[in-house]
Image 1: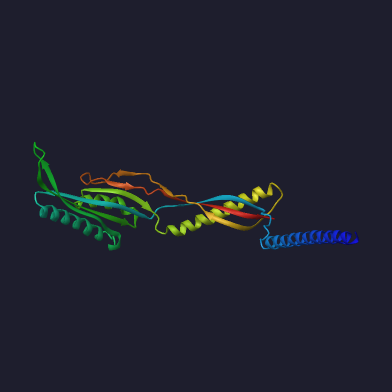
Image 2: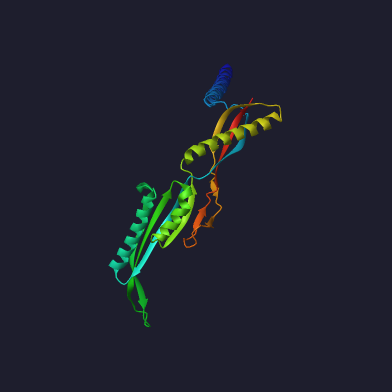
Length: 258
C-alpha cells in the first residue's frame, strides 16, 4: 500500500513539475516578446506634433517688352525649279541686306524654313503632271528696339517679302523678373500666414517647406494700327504698341506656428 502511495506521489510531483516548467516557459516567452516589442518601438522615431500652417502666395511683376520678333516669308512661283529658287533667294537676300543695314545683328536673323517643291495639275482622268515650281523661304527676325518694329515691317514688304506674320513681344531678361515675382509671392504668403495665425493669437515661425506653382505670364498687346505719314504716296507704317507683360509666380509655403 505504501508503495502504491509513493508511486502516486511521484506521478503528482512529475505533473506539478511539468506544469511549473510550462508556466515558467510561457512567462519567459511573454517577457521576451514584450522586450522585443519595446526594442522595435524604440527604433521608430517619435513623430512630433506638426504645428504648422500652409498658405499660398502670388507675386506679379509688370514690364514693358523690349524685344519684338516676327517672321518674314518669301514665296516665288516659276515654270522651272531654278527660276523659282533663284527668285526667292534674291528677294530674301534683299530683305536680309535691308535688315542688316537697319542695325539687326546676324545672331537675330534665323532662317526657319526653306522649301522648293513642284506644283501639279490634273487632267480629266486625274492624271497629274508638273505645272511649275514653288520656292518658299521663311526668316525669323528679332528686333531689340521695339520702336523700329513698325518701320521694319513696312520695309520688309518693300524689299520683296510676300508675307510678314507672327509678331510677338518678349522681355529679354525674363529670369530676373521671374525672381522678383517669386520674392513677392513669398512675401504675400507670409503676410497671409501672419494674418491667419494672428486671428487665433498665434505667431508664425520659420518656413517648414516651400514649393512653386506654374503660372504662365502673358502680355497685353494693343494691336497694330496704321500711322498717318506726311507723304501721301508712301505706304502707311504700322504703329506698334508692345503693351505690358505680366510675369506671375505662385508659391505654397508651410510655416511653423509658435
